[in-house]
Image (tube, rainbow, N blue to C red; front, side):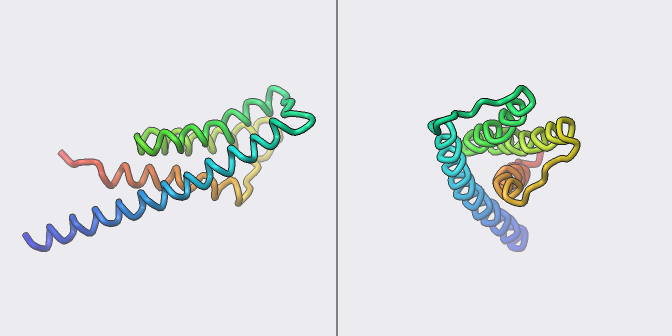
Length: 127
């Protein structure tokens, strides 16, 4: 009985630590994206996107940012939106440009979405 209690406490601590890593990382990502997009919006030439680029832009950075913000309240939903947005971005790039456009920096921006999904899965109650 005591051993089961220790396993539960350890699992809860793991979820708490992962949750705060995801939250801090997502805060940094959202801040970076808002500053980055804001700089482009207020530059002399604006954004000016073609349709295919606008679709990719809807996934990354917009979908990623929305997903990470939602994940602060709804980890599963927000994590799925953020992760799905990155997948959608890569699929759009694959269909439009013939390559999925994997860039380590973009993948690092997506990590909090995966961490939120892991926290959601670990914290779900078993019936």
